[in-house]
Image (cartoon, rainbow, N blue to C red; front, side, top):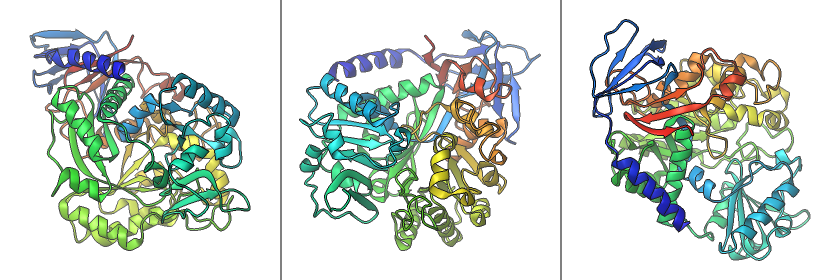
Length: 551
């Protein structure tokens, strides 16, 4: 890993040493952006100043000025840099350095991949990874520590589920964490037990994961530095120039600052602290200023109100259809939630609240309604995910300037599971993008990477079609909840910037904004969903500087 870090930092030193282009003309493009009114605007060229901002947007017939440099766009499509409104930067980067099980289709395949990874990494004291999904495996239950022991029995192993809301440990990991039959689950968590006993099965859900995390060695600063560079590299290759980082810790923030200090931060990061304590630790009395030429700002705080559907931790109004008696795990009591929201509002911090189940969504919407009138400043209350909403609560999204931060790819990944978890009579408000948009709430789209792939073009395709990569189901799942191509593009650009208080800085290709853009091989406003998924990113620019070139 040390060699990887040295190579990455050397490459980044070369990038940061190259001067920003001065008075650059990028022309011969098919330019597309979202205007102030939300309508699509087209253009042919940009003039970029030496500060990395757009000086002029040129259209057909406009005189081309003389500039120091000229970049020929070769007739390619230019889009604003894509913004992922909800992901986990360090999770994505560290995931690239650990074991990834997201492509496994069965328990046996996963065990073989774990065994092989352990053999190839004999020096690692723990085997860590993520991405398993018992639903994809067709297992019908959670895996067990005994099954994981079949792959690795000589070292502790801990692997997070694909949604990040459950973990799987082997026997040595249980011993390292001191987990026994007497271990009690913390509030908001669940320790799965073997049938007919109190012995831990090896699965920890939501807050119970903390029992294991405390025993796992934390990543070193050098590991975080390398993870950030890996995340930036992967995101730029997909055309992503800015993100909202959900759950930033002080260690993450320090890694972002180290990169910014040495000129190696090329990704714009709108940060949301991992809870109120980290919020104050990072921001002090309020959100930080924009740093490093609008590359970094701590906006607010990320809260978890419930778990996820896959681990049956999402908080529902009625029990799960496939688990009678279980309504999920509320992670904050009503008074706790309101106290933290008030604390954030008093400091001007923007709340971003994870709410997946219909009970959780109703709770955060009601809490905002109770508090917002006392704090009339522009806080842009964010509801993260909003996957299952009772139809009676949908209209509440149109009040108090609420942002619905949603991830289109979750719908295509979760469709069959959602049907099993909820039953057919509770799907009316499921992944209801169009219904929420019609309330006048602003949509901000993202991926929740590394839970899902951060590819924004897969997100756009899902948003406009409600179908997966195989085109299923035919005609789209609950197709009345599709959004238009224009809405999808806005949700991944201008509206995602607005959701993070970045409007006027980046998110649109307009005079005075940062010259963040991507050149691609097709027009997403004209292509089919299948074609959009196959979009090839040719170049990615941040602040007037090229940060990625294909091949």
